[in-house]
Length: 305
Image 1 (cartoon, rainbow, N blue to C red):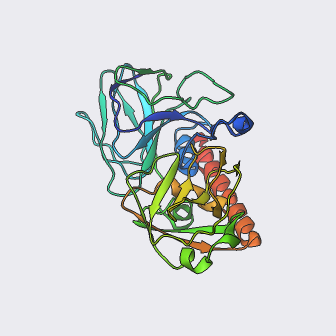
Image 2 (image 1 turned 30 degrees about the horizontal axis):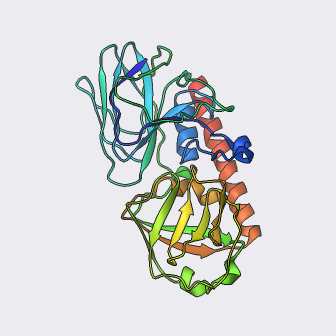
């Protein structure tokens, strides 16, 4: 096991989430940056959907009770140990009693601590994503393992999979269900700031308030990536823990190819939106899925070799 000496800011076990439970009002949940989670699992030899530890903003301190192979993959968190140098994105092995200190990250928001075989946690509603954050004194069960050093050279194709970790994000969108209620130029021609009230439920944005029509709206289904406009004319972009229905009008929907980028946007960053058509959104999604599948296959084949 890995024992939690300090839980960090918002550390939790995640997998693919609970997409089949939305009819019960349960959010999708799971990894906020799925590509980083899946690639981290591939580096340690796991299937892409193995449970991992999601680290956000400030990481935990963990102590191993046996040899455990690990990788911390995603945003470039600072790692340290009294025994060894630990660069982010490269596999390593903790020895019995060794403590792993995961600090902050200069940019980006989240990374994933993956171990061979994944963490052995209970299944709830078909998912091993935890309902609560890890706490001081928790034990995270996993199998003893050992890994040689592995990493990925940052070539062009691989970088296209990584969520951009600069402070200015450009998110591509499709029109929302109530997009014709608004002046599109007011939305697409401005830059929004990400406020400290943001979390996995959604990013709260601050910008020039949008002009609101005098209309009422019954609650309708929403999903990760939905951009809602609140009564004060400000926008919320729903995240993986966002609710399943909402009563605010929906001006836009972030396309699936850009959803992982939402998981790496942090308070203080800025966001702009660009509208694309459905054919473009589908083509970008197919391209990204194919590239992710290619890299997962390459990593697993190289491990077998």
